[in-house]
Image 1 (cartoon, rainbow, N blue to C red):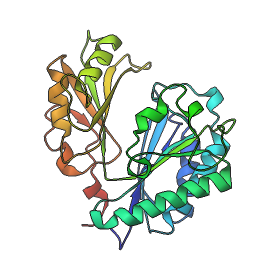
Image 2: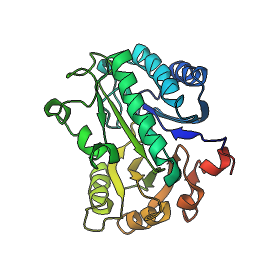
Image 3: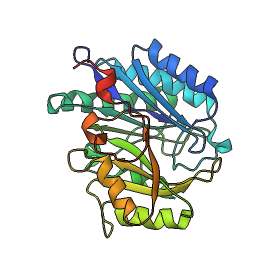
Image 4: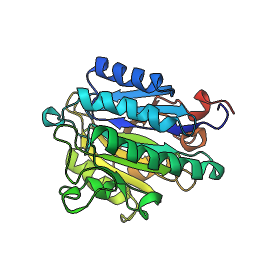
Length: 278
């Protein structure tokens, strides 16, 4: 990893139009960020970018990409299985070490201010910058209607909604696929069991049950928010106690140690270490 670079993992609500995604990626790059990875999914109708950039500059690169997302994505015509609140939906700044935490927090706050002032987006903080408030809580139906944003106007942008911003350590976005004859109801039931707080909850894991329209595949979509406490293999094992697992998919990049124990077929084994200098 170059010098003092931070990471960012912006998620945009577009997973089908690659011309739009190319334009957003080009805007990130023109602002000085390195685009390490882009993961797009048509069923989720979502793309996850992984960027690297210098403190003091990374928030500006993110704002340039956000401008293109706001110009090119209209949530009024959006339909995908992944929950969302905005066109430029989530924009966490990622610190890989404790020494980087302060810089990541400062960069996230600068980003929130910039998105609000330049693009009139209401920005809601989550995680450590918001007293531990969970991103999932902000996505619940009607949650933002009752909550004043941390930056920006009191109501959503007419076509681009709102943006969620945080500073956090790396997490693992990971989908576990269930073999037939599992149903969407099965996936939702299992997700409730294995997410943190469930009867068989895996520490630090968020989980949703989803079905992909293009293939009929039923999956448990998870975020492993603390890879030091739980691995992708632990999530697979927890799911496998309730249904046969046919495969898994890594979304974006993850620390190598967090996916090393996955024993089922895994699409995309790219790691942060593959893309960053040690």
